[in-house]
Length: 424
Image (cartoon, rainbow, N blue to C red; front, side):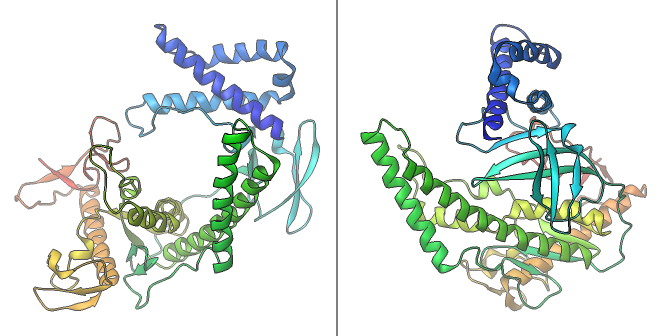
């Protein structure tokens, strides 16, 4: 399976290089049909290519075709496809061959692979539908299989429950507007595991330096063992983060009619502060620690899970503009930076004198913005004409996600024009 993963990576990179060369020499692109025909000839000439199942090789070509189409589509935020590294994640897909799946008991099942036969696998949950494909991935030295399942499931009707706003942060993982205490994510690593991870990182750095100086860059068995042990520890950390995220998002969408959240640009939030050689940045190490803490709370994954769990449980996922939520008073609704000094957890309004928890105040403001956004959408859907601040009628702007708006975010490139009324 490891050999198949490397072969699939080579075919995928070769297909991408073929398209790049065609573009350089004047051709618009290479069709998927031409590449499939070339793959057939390649399988006849090389045994290592023929060893990979034909369905997995065809799936690699389909990945390149889909990535290319997404890049040239102005309505898609995808970037140009990149080459996969040799030390990256190994994977391959079997669209048709992996339909042979059977359940042994509650926790174990078996999947049928070509040239291997039936292989046991641990089932994390019931499939719940007909299996259409399977993707095999190697993480931390262990192979995982994920099934693409067709489920006869329609979006649930609105559950009729009251809504909420939720403020995702670092000190407080999540503060819900209708709760008095924040929800804190348990540490993803114990103190002993954190010390061991730091030791493995330092050991890897020493062994890499030795390999480059004395072994021409070749990895020793000890270095490979260090990399494997570190990968296993980081995989355990990722599973703990994911478990908390699943529990949080499912509980929010089950018990609320809508969930308002900040539309955060995580990529810009976690950008490095090191600057350039001419203009070096300041507090680079502190900013790097903050970036690690932000990514440890997985704000992007929480937004992704809220988007699909809301359809399952009859809720609404409402992203709202993030600027000023922690500086707005929940009582007088006046925004003033002086009300939130520093990065503490206290909020004191300079207008009305309200005092409270800063994250809870932000969640209340997020809920208010989400409710206003829902009202605007309902009026537009009903054919009404909401009035903007200038007193003129407005109509819903056409959504656009293309790259024609420089400096715009991927989810709302026109400054949330898809959600806010545009002046007529």
